[in-house]
Picture 1 (spheres, rainbow, N blue to C red):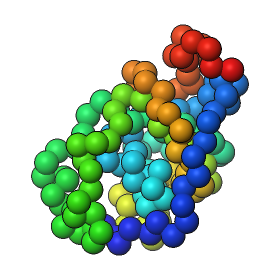
Picture 2: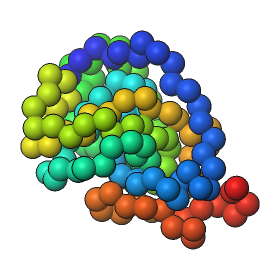
Picture 3: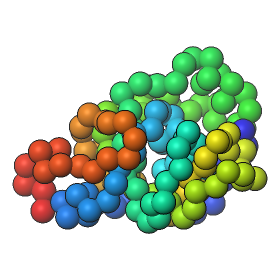
Picture 4: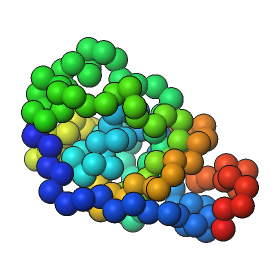
Length: 150
């Protein structure tokens, strides 16, 4: 793991319904989803490759990584000793990031392969959008959106 980058503040973002319906979404377990939006985690590992480039909605899954994984992360990540694992959003689309590449090798300490989606430009939503996640990349449906969202 690495020292948190947090070099640039993450801009809050209020997505429109059209934006949410136009872009794919990926469920990611916490705290990894949060670390992506903090501009710390720059690679998302998957067992499958993607041709997608551009905006990818980040859905925080319902589960948190194990206590052992949390402890290991804290031990190897100075600055995260007081990471608020108990105050993370779960079961909601919480932001968007751009997928700029899909690689089989990367210098990031987050790369574990076999495929890594290289991420950039995270934007946190001003309000989480509660919904159930799905496997793989998926598109939101109109029924996933809250009433009154334009």
